[in-house]
Amino acid sequence: MVVHGWVWATTIVVLLAILLIDLAVIGRRPHVPSMRECTLWVVLYVGLAGLFGLGLYLLSGPKPATEFFAGWITEYSLSVDNLFVFVIIMSRFAVPRRYQQKVLLIGIVLALVMRGLFIAAGAAMIERFAWVFYVFGAFLVYTAVKTAVHKEGDEADEFKVNPLVRWARRRLPLSREFGEGRVLVREGGRRMVTPMLIVMITIGTTDLLFALDSIPAIFGLTKEAYLVFAANVFALMGLRQLYFLLGGLMERLVYLNVGLGVILGFIGVKLILEAMHENELPFVNGGQPITWAPHVPIWLSLSVIVAALAVTTAASLVKTSVQARRAAHAER
Image 1 (cartoon, rainbow, N blue to C red):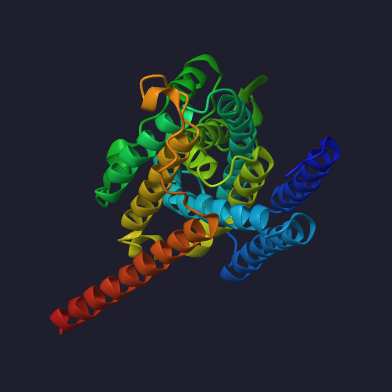
Image 2: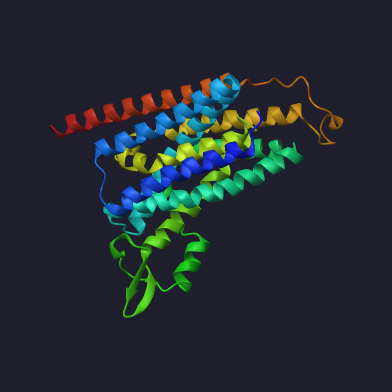
């Protein structure tokens, strides 16, 4: 797949325009979005991702389109898991609900910029060092096990304010008020930053930590940096509305960690197999490619991802429904 510079430029400009429109709508009227509003925005962003994938299919064929959809679904599902931590961040900083949309959107924009740099670095490494797939694959398998055995409530224990946020708290003149959702306010003739800035930095940098497993995962599905970038953008663009739309539903996805563990483990093994096909390490098979390693087609990857999410979501909803009925019966 050949991606010209003008395609990159056009894609970035269009996506930035959408995000700026979104930001303008929020900035004009901070509010707690209704379920209808959230649903419409989520449907819009999912529809845009679908149109993008369809465009890839028509212009470049089924392989890039399938790789994009596999990557987008993987990134979106991993982003849903990240929402648990975003809830904790909002709670820890006591962000008023009417300002949470703005915090999430600015934090997500920061995350997109940092992920862009991460993707560029990852693409350069893969281009020069094929053996890095061994590292990515082993890391994903480790992360898969850790994710699968993850227990409910662990997010609160694991969340720590990162060094950048601690530095900002110490060095910046910080107001105690949220200043009607503004980042800067003037108090006593002195310009000060509000907690909004600290929360935005926290959201953005925390998401970058999540990218440590999601970016290698999508590189296991496609080596094309343009598709990796597009899948990340479309996954993060609808994350803000998904935060409000899911609400209490997140607590019902009790087996989501198992599904994500299966996906990460599968992609980790796929990455190791890819590394074996392109092996250059002198101490592995004499530095020669391992031709007997099976090849995992992209359609199989997409099927495993969708099946893992569908089964674990259905199992989660069934379990929580049974528990709710039992609890209601016990109260009678």
